[in-house]
Amino acid sequence: MAGTALEMTGLEKRYGKRRALAGLDLRVGRGVLFGLVGSNGAGKTTTLSIAAGITKPNRGSVNVLGEGLFDAARSAGRLSLIPQGAALPPHAVVRDLLMFYARLQGLRGSDALGSVVEVLEWARLSDRAKSSVRSLSHGMQRRIAIAQAFLGDPELVLLDEPMSGLDPREVVRTRNMLVERKGRQTIVVSSHNLSEIERMCDEAAFIEEGRTVRQDSMESITGRRHAITYLLESDAVPLERLGELLPDARFSPDPPGEAVAGCGCVLRCEYDSSRKTAAEVNAVVVGCLLESGAGLVEVRRGCELESAYLEASDRPFPVPS
Amino acid sequence: MKLVRDIFLVARHELADSVKSRRAAVVLILYVSVALLACNGFITVLHRIEVELSKTLGLPEASEPGTVINTLWQSKQFRRMMKELVGSREVVEQLMSVHPMALIYGWLVFSLTPPLVMLTASPRISEELGSGSIKYVFLRTSRSAWCVGKFIGQGLMTVVALTLSASATWCLVRYRLTGMEGLAAAQGMIVYSWKGWLYSLSFLGLALGVSQLTRSPNRAMAVGFGAWMGVTILGVMSHNLTDGSWGPLWQGVNMLVPMGHRLDLWRVDIAHQLESAAFLVALGFVYMFTGHAFLARRDL
Image 1 (cartoon, rainbow over the protein chains, first blue to last red):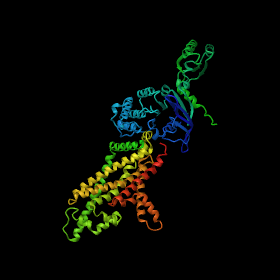
Image 2 (cartoon, rainbow over the protein chains, first blue to last red):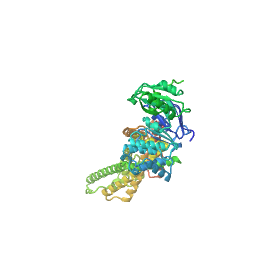
Image 3 (cartoon, rainbow over the protein chains, first blue to last red):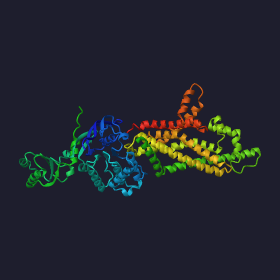
């Protein structure tokens, strides 16, 4: 799958006096599982609503699946969305409702039925097909909302906080379900749960105050290919010795944040991945740290998405030229 | 082609959803009970008139209502009353061939269906806007197809409700007016229930137009009733103020309100009825798409 599924440039959106988007740029390639990260009110839901064509931008360009702004009359079935805070009709019977949605997006007869049966099995709700929506638990309703988004295998699926309201077991299942679909569809997930985004997404964008602060592949953002993080008990790090052993690598010791309580230091090692593998770097660094008695507690490949996000979102916003 | 298919799908879903949510049952009960209560009240009043008439003329008192209804039907006073109800002597003369109870039923339908339509239809779109469930649909079809589908679905529900109310009312009338010509009354009542349905389509458009302006079902219902009253007042004014320098203006207003086309529905000739039906359906769509102009542009 080559090309761009979703492209937004200089997007602006105002709700009265409040500015929800202030020149947002975003590019999502086809077949990618893409994460959208940002604090409350950063503009994630507005971004997805504009992509889905249910909200109109004030300024900027939008290109959805190469056809400009999404138009349901023209491109029904090519894009789907789990809208945030939108209830399913409570009296509707699950299967009838999904059949209605499937037919509206252009599927006919047996194709529609086949797609409904498939997504119900996928969401493990086949046994509740004849139940009314209101008789289902909140988590089940959420799964129905996720299932409807995959009816007819749309090319672009937008999921706004899909995991909210799901129990931990269902979160894992849903994550696995989404990962299974990698490459088959382009999926954009907005979430506050950074560990979920980190585990399943290929790319991510950080949005703050209506702008894209950073967009990159997950490996680049977290530094999985070129960085290793060591959590140490002591802050006495043998930096000189490490520099002698690995002259091409860069070591930066930082005081631990609140998230790594019980540690004295977080040592970050950035290396040239074209010259050395992570295993080779670890063989040297771990040996040196154990010898020095710095108290090695944990080794992590790269850094957590959370750290990268906090670092990126704390940066001052670039001044528009 | 997709537009037509989507309209059909939405209309069918609207009907099915009304049945499952028991909204259809509520609408049917409402229409039937209002028609029964109003008709029963009318028959009771009719019986009192008959008793008073018998006393005045020194005749034996009628034991059952409807005994002298045929005499009453031919009387000048009754025709004068009908003229007041219908609004035209010419039309009253045409209506002499119609069964009197069918006419009374017709008058009830024309009077009571508009507020019932406003009551049941005006929250329909706003409640889906409020819950957000509309977002699942607007990714799959155009907003205008969805609105037209809603209109057709609601319209079909109304015609079923009116046909059932005509049947129930006929049973009541048959029970209370034992001397009534059953077949003629049944035909007349069914015909007027369908004419009432045509008349209600303009109000259905008004209700769905209002419903697109707000996310609150209660506010939609309140605004809907306000709109119904406004249109009714305009209709009365435009009917009575056709003389004078403002006459042409009021005649124009008369064309834009449902009451301006109601008189033609009373007539028995097809040409007037078709013209009136076309105007009323067109008015319904004009009202609905006036509200839709707002929904089509709004963010969800």
